[in-house]
Image (cartoon, rainbow, N blue to C red; front, side, top):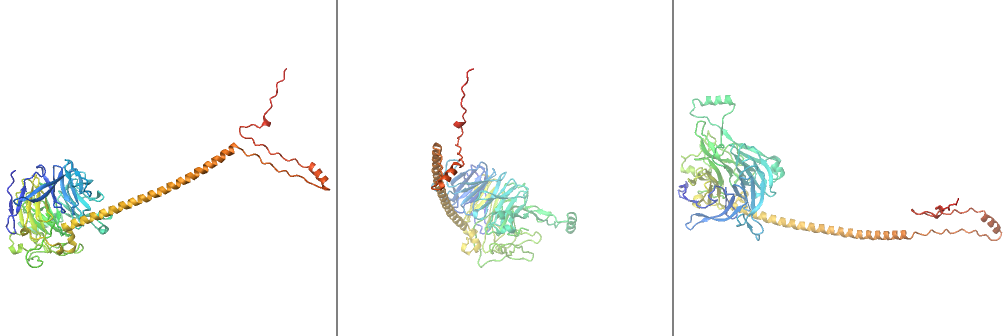
Length: 610
């Protein structure tokens, strides 16, 4: 196959990095819609319109150029798979597609059992849960910190927050008037962001009493609401107008408020995706598909906006682009600062204004810090000044104790930025014939993979001379050490072990309870049996006695007579009294039912002949 000639350059050193569009049948030459790296194993997952998820091992060929080897294929979807994402710890994989369902995959704990896909090929992953709730295609998804939840965006204009452990939906996030094409979850778990074709970005968070409760708990879900809608900014008047002040007064009289300029592209953007992303430290939110006009009469430019944490009222940084941006992806690695000396500071100019932002990397989640950002006095957002001196270009944009890298992918270019400069450190254009769809950084931060609708993926490999040295986790602030890829994988393994121990204890407890219950039932049955036997013997004895009673009716008792005895002189009077005594009443004879007393039977009278 013949590929377009790519333009590759590095603005830092001028060296040409390793960039290669791999001539591999990723998904039968069908569009590749999403890619992601496993933080635990380094495997690359890809998905596309062939309804399958494929896992690849990224390495180098004999000549040292990027290369991939197919490992396995996961088959369970019935339609196009639009997004695939590994959990922060690498213990799970989530995929969403056109059927509106989300499938959660996990590595089985029992290694002795073999699992095969629909092609009969062995696989180390199996379906753990199928989440159904969307009425239309799922366009994008993002994991919650710790892998306990997932947020998905769909063509049905809604987002759903899923409880992965319970395998059910926790709540719906509504408000968009068009397709939700991208979602992102804050690494600290506070904010959930969704971006739509309705030219808005919605920032959701749990506030009030819900903020003090565990994530995805009933109280937390009850208090989740939209905190900010990123939609537009105040339009700047055309400086070439005849009388700008009069025009402004006229606009004020007619509308009673200044005109607003949209911040993002409308639904005519030639891409299915608008995928925002949080920095690994949670300090910034990068939002693609932006538009910018220097003033009302200026030409519309493409842009990518960076918002400081907790400061969503205006962008803290604007990165210009030569084409509409479709996704932003931060490297998971923290890098050492460049140059000698300690922590550099941001340069200030006479006309510059300070924009406050939360530097989550320097403080705890409840503290804030002011970060100076270069801005124009009229636009209120940073504009890349191509005429800066080399000294100014090397100065950091944000006062952080480390650097972070992120890639901005437009429909046909890739620009890699460093948080210490507003100029890209690497740029690649003309890689693919069709639009770029997604990007993914390897856990080591030295490899960037870009997917495209033309059915191919490109691999960019960097050296330490180009991107810098990864920072030792021991040098990071304590609250950020848990956000490194290695720490997340370790936390996932520890959680899995704890869950296994808990499940084993619960199983043993259930067995003990079942055994105790069985013993109680056995004792009750024995007691019932003994009582039944005793009752049976009693009934038998009573029956025997009753039968004996019916067979031999008791004889009437004899009444002892009372004799009259007299001796001597009283004998004569006793005799006279005995003769005059009352006759005793004779007791009637009992007649049983059905019997006729002999005395009452009428005697037959013989007929008398006439």
